[in-house]
Length: 410
Image (cartoon, rainbow, N blue to C red; front, side):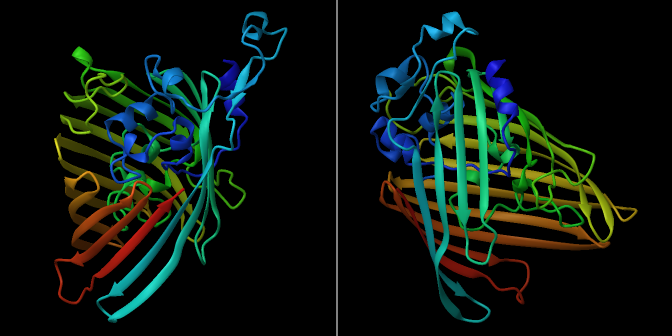
């Protein structure tokens, strides 16, 4: 209760989710311990995240190489409230940086252009004592407002984390589109499917708010259940406060059949990142947004997704339906994708995604089909190169584009 009260006092900010090299420094290990082609998580990384950025089952003290600075003796716990509850902080600043640069080629104009930098991010995250963790970011992109975010988590158990700050489906334990951990430059169509007024999309999240989420292993310590449910401001104004009287609500449930446990430690004799598993999930977001010129847009988005891991092959699909009550009419839009990746080597991946989007705006329907092939190479554990093409399929008068993107995290 003490930690929940602290969390409620935090400033509630927009949504985000990233991997940070600060954790590699904390445990003195490679980024590949928790990632396959960062920022995508491997089974170990998902367990680490689901335990509040800690390793499970007593592994934390053994694996942590950086000794924290104690803020009070542990015996203060026994005398509380006559003393301040003890805690600790990292011995070195738990910060990291992420830089992205791109080389573009546009089919329509036959223009080649450098976009360096595309974005620069300052990232920070870690743990505070036994039951608190935090994550934050400041993001800069040319010609865009500076982005920022922060959250504080209360982590009493793996099956229950209380998150104060940015909340939303994309920041849950198993994002429906893995948008926050996508490989491609192109966002998933499900993540950017907008309501009729164009004022909200899935990766906007629910804004500042509260969420409860967690993970629990399945039978025989395989697979298991993950869930997230929360409430947030939804659309916010320039002062980061709610712009209407209603709140956004969201929920997601997944179940993983077989494979690595979603919350427990892997076996000591099993150090590979491959697994054979199937995960299915459903999700929902309901909210209200305000268009200053035309009024309210009451919308809800619902969908389902599935992921299949078979050793070096990963397949995934998701579908979502958006419905908006706006301008006295009902608008319905749909989006779906199927993707697959194959690990040729631990540092080299082939990838492809097919997307179908059917958008309903102003009584007109606009359908799009897109193919996105890509190749990802880890030049180093913290340096990633992605070559990608985004090509429309349904019309000859639409043009695609190609990019080579370099990510550097340190």
